[in-house]
Image (cartoon, rainbow, N blue to C red; front, side, top):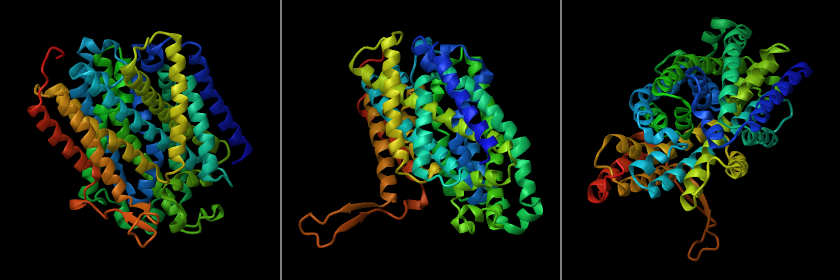
Amino acid sequence: MHWIDLTIFVCYMIGMLGFGVFFLQRNKGADDYYVGGRNMSSLHIGLSVVATDVGGGFSIGLGGLGFVMGISGSWMLFTGLVGAWMAAVLLIPKVKGNPVFDKAFTFPEIFKHYFNPEVALVAGIISAIGYAGFTSSQILAGAKLAQGTFANLDLQTALIIMGSVAVIYTVMGGLKAVIYTDTVQWTILMLGLIFVGIPISYNAIGGWEAISQTVDPELLSMSNLTWQRVVYWGATIIPIWFVGMTLYQRIYACNDEKTAKKAWFLAGLFEWPVMAFMGVALGLFAKVAAAQGMFDYLGAANVSDTDPETGLPMLLRTVLPVGFMGIMMSAYFSAILSTADSCLMASSGNVVSDIIGYFREVDHDSDTFLRFSQVTTLLIGAGALLVASMMTNVLDLMLYSYAFMVSGLFVPVVGAFYWDNSSSTGAIGAMMLGGGTTLILQLLLEDIVLNVQKIPFFDFNQVVLGIEKLPAGLDANVFGISVSIIMFVTLSLLFPDQSDDSL
């Protein structure tokens, strides 16, 4: 990277950290730190929602999908559009229309109202773990982007650098800082892609003629995917709009139902078609560039040597002129930071308010609460960095985290809002068995290697526990949600709550 680009990048990161410092001095309590003072506009919220949901992780992941699948990879974010609009119609009126939630801070408070504190505790644990994993995926996305951009930078060093910046920024910031910086970051990213990244990359690889001659025709088709993948994306991404802690924080940050709905409709359109097609198009361009040998100087001699998720940053590094490179990389890094800080705050809020708050009363307006939240955020961020160092694929880590939360939380929250026979026992059973089923199946699909050389009656050193695929080729999350539905309905009917006063 040229020193001019590096200077732009460093100045931009300092500027974003400056936002964190600015709002650090103005955060007075939980309302500012976790829900942005509850008076944000639909434009700021809408851009923040899509920046957090798509952000850098999906940006890098979309590039990888475009590299492997072509433009049909854009269907992944179509599920984001569906989920956002469904939540606007079905969820937001239930939350903003109930004055009980006017002072809420976290998603599990929904369960505390409709069920009991024990259900909220379990939901808080699931949400905290899921968002810690999601934070790891963002740190990994930033590290991959840095590795593909900076010469001689290995992935582990990039992880430490990106993880440290993300955690420090989050500890200082708060949701108000996140939302305002998201607006700036997303605007720069969109303008950069539309007017700089896409046209320059398109011309550099030789335009449509080069694309059509280089890649398989199926990569230019919208039908290059299986029905199992469609089910997987739909079952994993659509429900997250009903259980995402970061999304509930932004619902709470809106001053009324109309504002929240407008924000969600806007976010859906930005997800698909806007970001979806730009992301996969750049990934497709990167595949063409790799085939043309444009990445040889980076050590990727052919397409098979190119990590699909690093193809996009290598493409931008190769084709962008001095000055533009620094701007585009800053925009991508800031998009990653905007998602990482939101997810870190979500996990921190779950730990402090829902888990610790279950065992002892917390004063959300006190300075002690604010400082304790920042320390908790720091510790979770360190753990997320450790998890990121063990993974290699951004999109897999994101979707694993999504699936774990969705399979445990989606069915109970729908039941809470729409089924009068829902019970606390049913909710806990659905959360634990639904989420547990998904987690176990995911681990078995990855092959677990156990050392058994010291176990009696074994004559070999290792045993591999694993399965090649699930029935019908479906994903673990589909089975987790199915188990969750069965357990929720069965246990709710067998063990109804003794009192309906909370409803």
